[in-house]
Amino acid sequence: MSSNKAFREDATRRERLKEWVSRPGGFGIITGVVMFASITLVGFIYPLVGPYGSDEFVGKSLEAPSLAHPMGLDQLGRDVMTRVFSAVPIDIGIAFLGVSIPLVIGTIVGILLGLSKNKYFKSIVSSLIDGINAFPLLIIAIAMVAFLGPGLFNVVIILTIMNWARYARIARTRAVVVLQQNYIEATKLMGYSRRRVIRKHIAPNVSSESLAYALSDFILVIIIVSGLSFLGLAARPPTAEWGSMIADGRTFLGEAWWLTVFPGLALCWAAISLSFIVEGLSRRDRGNA
Amino acid sequence: MVIAFSLIRLSPGDPAAARLGAGAETEAVEALREQLGLNKGALEQFINYMAGIFRGDLGVSLVNGVDVLETIQRTFPLTLIYITLSVLFAFIISIPVGTIIGWSNKATAVYIFRGITAIIIATPNFFIAMVAILIFSVQRNWAPVFGYVSEFPENLKYLWLPIAINTLILVAIISRVLHTSVVDTREEEFVETGIIRGVSRPRFFWFYILKPSLAPTVVLMSYMMATMLGATVILETIFSLPGIGRELVGAVLASDYPMVQGILLMFGVITVLLSFIGDLLAYALDRRVKI
View 1 (cartoon, rainbow over the protein chains, first blue to last red):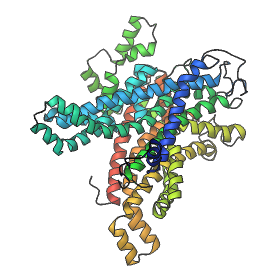
View 2: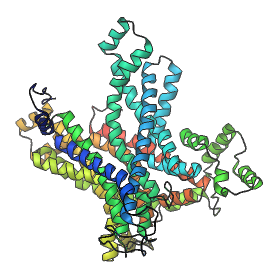
View 3: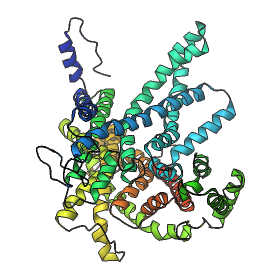
View 4: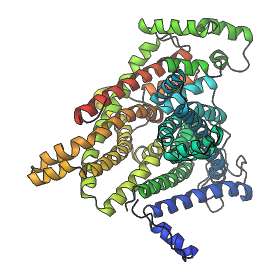
C-alpha cells in the first residue's frame, strides 16, 4: 500500500482522475471498464436501433461480410452482427445472475457459519461446502443438465447450487477474522442489536473479499455459460447466444468463417475486459507497478 | 461420493420423464422408474448403488445396454494420455518461463507476460480451438478433425492440435502462479544466503528458487487437473476424440442416467485422488507445508 496517499484538497476533477489512473493498475482498470461498458452499451442499444431483428431472415444464406452486413449472414440468412449484439444481454445477464445469487447466498451462509456456536450445524455445513468445492464445476454442471434438462434458466439454478459453496468458504474465513476485530467488540459495548451488528458492521467487511472474488468468477461463469451452450446444453437454437452461435458456425467453418469468429471475438472481448479489471485491481492491491 | 449421488438425486427433475420426453404416457414413465429403481426410497437406492460400486457394477447404459464400467475403461485411457501429455509439456515450458521472468523482474517483461497470459486465460478454450482448426485444418490439412484412428503413429496427427491447445492454456496458468511464487521466494533470506555463499548457478536455481516456489504450483496443478477434465469435455467434442468427455456429453444429451452417474463418480474419485497426490508432492518439495 505504498501509493495510497490522499488526494490533494485543491485538485480539480481532471487532475484527480489523472492521479487515480497513474496509480498501479490504473491503466488496466480503465481499459477493462471502457471495454466492458462499450460492449454492454452496444448490446443493449444496437438491437433497438439496428435495422434487422435477431431472428429475421434478411438475405441469402452464408452471405460474406459486406457494407450492409458487416459480419455477414448465417446459414439461415440472419444478420450475424445483430445476433452477436443481441446475445449480450443474454450472456452477460445470465452470467450476472449466476454470480450474484450465489454471492448473496454464500456470503450469508458464511457469516452465519462464522457466528454460529452450534457444533453440528458448523460441521455439517462445512463438509457440505468442501464436498461441493471438490468437484470441477463444468463437469457437475454438465451432469446436472442431464437431470434438469437444457435451458438457460436451469443453468442459473445449477450455478447457484454449485457456486454458493465457494463464496461461503471465503466469507467464513473472512468472518472469523472480522469477528475478532475491536470494532465488533465496540458495537457490543455500545449495546447495538445483533441484527444491526451483522448488517452494518460484519456484512460490509466480509463482503469486500467476496466481491473481489466475484469479479474473477464472472469471467469463469461467462465461459461456462457459453461453453454449455456450445455443447448444446444451455441456450436452445433460436436464441442468439455466443456459445451456441459458435457451435452453429462449426459446421460451416470451411466456407463461412464469420459465423464462428465474430461471436467468439465478442465473447473474448467481454471476458478479457473483465480480466483486465481483475488484473488491475490485484496490481493495485499489491501496490507495485 | 455421497455428494455426487445426492446432487443428482435431489435435483428437481425426473430422469425417467426426461428420458422419455414430454409427451410420454404415465405408464411408460412408471415402468422406466421401476426399471431404474427410482420408485424406492432415497436411502434404499443409495445403499443399492453403493453395493453395486463395491461389486464393480455401475449399471448398464439405457441407450445401448453396454456396461458403464466397460465404457469408462474403453474411453478413459485416451483422455488420460492426452491430459498427462499436455500437463507434462506445460510444465516443461512454464518452469523456465516463470522462473526467468520472476527472477529478472523487468517491468516491461512482466507487464507483457501478465497481459498475454491474462488474455489466454480469459479466452474460452473452444474459441481457441475453432481458430486453430480454421488455421491448421481448414486452410492446410495438417490436423484432421474427423475420423480418429487409434493406432500409434497415425493418432498423433489427430492428437497434436488438442494437446497443443491444452498446453497453451496450462502454460498461461502455471507460469503465472510460478512467477508470483518466484517473486515471493526472492524476498526470503535464504536466497540472499545462497548468493553470498556463492552456490553454483544450476544448484542455486533449483534448490534456492525453484524448489520452494513449486509447492503452490503443484497444489494448484492437482486442482487444475480436475478443471482440465472439464476442459477436455469441450475439446474432445470439437475434435471428435472418443474420450470420456465426449461420452459424458453424449450421455447427457441422451439422458443416459446410469452412464452420467458412473462417469461423474469416476471424476469424483479422480479429483479426490489428485488433490491427495498434490498435497503429498507439495510436502515433498517444501517441508514447511502442512498437510
